Length: 220
Image 1: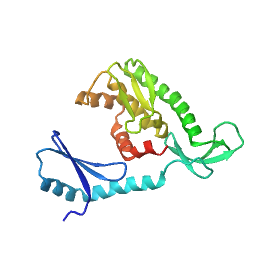
Image 2: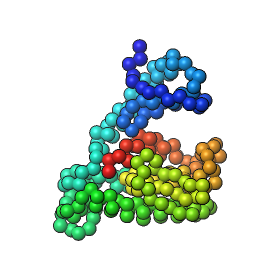
Image 3: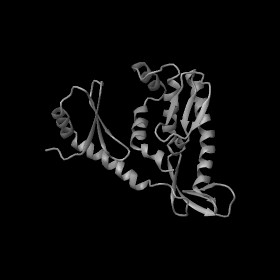
């Protein structure tokens, strides 16, 4: 008997997908006409894979709890973990594995600082890849999204979550290239993914990172 807890989401899709969400829950995305018994058989075959993925997410969740702006706590910046140290300096500075912040620095102050950093870095990456890909995007907006890392409007405007500033630069680049590719390809067709692969051959690694670290959008 299967002892793994899971949720089934049925749709008109053609194949089954096993998804481990940001809280280490197993979600089965399945075609409308597939039998429950077939789903159970697949879960049994993938039991080891499921356990490994759930363990990775659980370890991440234990390491990255909601951000607290106090000395000794930690914060993510460009994929690296920095220990917060409060001091008398008026500006945010980095020192080895520490991030130095003013004594009165609050979570709201950290959000303002991270948004400013995100604006600089994301605009730089968008301009770089837009030039490389030969596409023109109309505008770049920083969003406060906690669900989607990025999106592209019908007119070619990019919406990028400022929380991307916590991700490794390779992951930021993937989100940027993904959304820029939507200027030419409005769906997720084979041509769309082929386009991304010409720019970022290892893009699936970044996809996996985002999937496993989705709950980063909720920690600050």
